[in-house]
Each structure stands twice: as structure tokens, then as C-alpha cells.
Image (cartoon, rainbow, N blue to C red; front, side, top):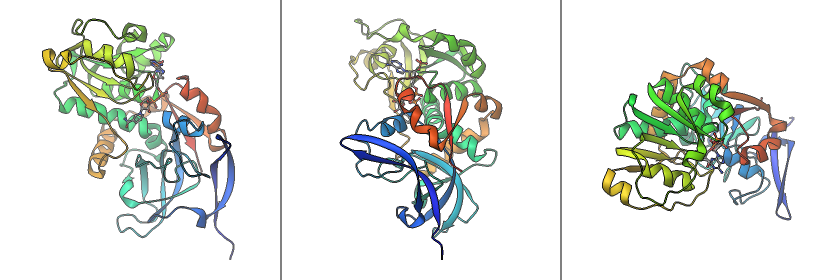
Length: 332
Ligand code: NDP
């Protein structure tokens, strides 16, 4: 009998440099797991850029199939929760880092890591949401759970707004009725950000420096921060009384030099957002909320597409902050 095969973007390492190429592999090369998925789409995230560039030692074992998220159809399963033909999505669990990921026609995974794609979303739209959109919704739900309400008197700042997490937060924030203020280094994207859901757009240089004073004027009731570093330190000084910041990312640096004053004198909360290890029930709740509020046309406006063979070329671009919005990877 002829062996079953699938195409994958295989990443290999020689002399500390990584290189990627499309390779045909036999199914028996797939890692262990109880569900085999025919992958339809994956997406390109900042972390994928790091992995494709061999930065950060996120991958220890080569050869490796990257791709930190995926959506597709169950091909076979020994887990009773999944039947062949079910539509499933995966984000997180270090898939694409410590386990072969979504940049392939097939993936074999642990059933606990998967969630059903909710009705109303295609597998392509699920990856247009992807890790970035999932994280953005998780962040906004965390802010709402900590008191943020919709309306112009509760401005919601989004930093890194042209990126995947930031752009998704602008989209979800707008759809949920929040007064979204988008901070971007690319003011030429103003019209696009307004169309996506921003009520106001500001230049990220306004937030770039860590101020010498521990408190500045109260500007923000909530913040989805995809940037970290001095931007996050600045935002903390401008939070309104009782406001919260959902810290999602570090594209502007992983350090944080601040004071305790915003926490002591303004009751500010700093909420950590982790999309990687969050429990399956919480994950399903976030996906269902996404399916309830999604606007497919706006999601499509945010989304570009790339072939599996071409995704590695975009790695330097996403690391340089040059990729706008979301990019889905066609793995079929
Ligand atoms: P992107 O590269 O798509 O977006 C990042 C955006 O940040 C850029 O588009 C740019 O927006 C802004 N930016 C880039 N460099 C700088 C800089 N030096 N200073 C200030 N702003 C900068 O990445 P993602 O949106 O995919 O990810 C953003 C961050 O979130 C990453 O650190 C990623 O690792 C993290 N992340 C965390 C998750 C979690 O579970 N906590 C899940 C997913 C991602 P603009 O030009 O508009 O200012």
C-alpha cells in the first residue's frame, strides 16, 4: 500500500541559522496525538516570525514544522469528542514551538488543545481571527470583567493598532461599542483604523517615552497593550481612576520600568493576558463571543493571504512591525 503523505513547511537548523522549505512527508512522521487534522488555514503571528527567523530559542528540536495556530477538518480521531469532518481550531499550547504546528497540510494534536470552530465562522475566518484576534478578544473581555463599559466616557486605548493583536482589538472594541482610541506609528493608516472601529487615532510617539512623573492626566479607562516597554510604562501614568490595562505583548520591549503610584493612587489594575495555556472552557467561551460579534466584511478587510510556500519570506517583515493586520496562510 502506498504511504499517505502531506506537504509541510519544514524548518531546519545548521550552524545556528535556520532555513525553511516545502517538503513532502509520510504521515508516520507526524507527532503523537489523538486527533489528526487536515489543516486548511494557519496564520502569521509575531511569534511565527521569531521562529521562522530562529530568534528567541523557542524551538529546540529540528527539523520542525512551525505555525502557532491552525484551523481545519478532523481526518481521524481516537478522542470521542471529535468525529471525522468536524471543524476545529487551535491556538496556543506551544504548538508550532514544542510540537509540530499549522504550516502543513496535516497536524496531529492532543484533543484537549482543540476547540470546535463556532457556527458562523469559516475555517479561513477562524484563522483571520487566529491567535492575535483570540488574544485581543480575551483582553477586552478581561477589561470588561474588571469594570470597563462601552461608551465615549470610557476611552479604550489600543497600542500597536496596525498589528495583528492591536488591529483585532480595534475591530472587537468597535463592534462591542467601546470608544476605541488607536495608537499607531503609521498615521497613514488612519482611515483604515477608523473604518475598522477606531473613534480616534493618535501617533504612538505620544506614548513612546516613560515619563519622569509617576502620574499624568487621566486619559484612558482601559487599554489593550500590544507594545509593552516604555509605552506600557507611559500608559500606566495616564490611566483614569480604577482603569485597567490588559498587557498582551512586547513588540516595543519586554522591560517595564514604572512606579507603584498608579496602582496606589488611582487603583489601576494591570491584567496579564496569556492566550497560550488558558483553559479549554475559557477558550471556547472567547471563541463563542467572537462568533457572536464578528463582522465578516470588516474581518476580511483586516486580512491578507499568503501561500504556505511564501510565508517564510514575511518573517522579517512582521518582526520589523511592517505587516499590517492579519495574514492567513493557505495550507490546503
Ligand atoms: P504585529 O507585529 O502584527 O504588531 C505589533 C505592532 O506593534 C506593530 O504593527 C506596530 O504597530 C507596533 N510596534 C512594532 N514595533 C514597535 C516598537 N518598537 N515600538 C512601539 N510599537 C511598535 O504583532 P502581533 O500583533 O501579532 O503581536 C503583538 C505582540 O503581542 C507581540 O509581542 C506578540 O508576541 C504578543 N502576543 C501575545 C499573546 C499573548 O497570549 N499574550 C498572543 C499573541 C501575541 P503600529 O505601527 O500601529 O504602532
